[in-house]
Image (tube, rainbow, N blue to C red):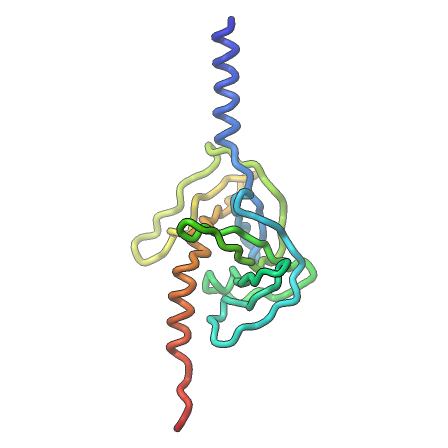
Length: 179
């Protein structure tokens, strides 16, 4: 009898480990999600300081309790139009691993929806579109109520190294002053 109880407990613990929580949010008409363990907080959109010579997807920086936090427009980062600011627009502060350290980055989203528990059995691998289309930033496709939610790999979407490379590339295209 004891072995049976232990086995049921182990199964329950395994199932609990396979269920992860995700914060879902809207970008346009699509739903995206990030693991709640990487989300530090959600704040109202505002008080941004624009930084000159940055690519279009970097909205600026905010002062978050004395720390300078860069803010990225996720829609623009994905090559779409910049997010139109509305009453529901907010900034999700995400902790991104950068080597051995972590950096906070703000992400502008149209609206935060809810926190969902998605079992591992309901997560499909990223789709394969071929070598010309990047899917490395997609952790998986979560099935929720018959629809897909795109689960983002924050380490790839918000890669500080890649953003720095893109920022450097944007800086080299700056117009030269006539002399």
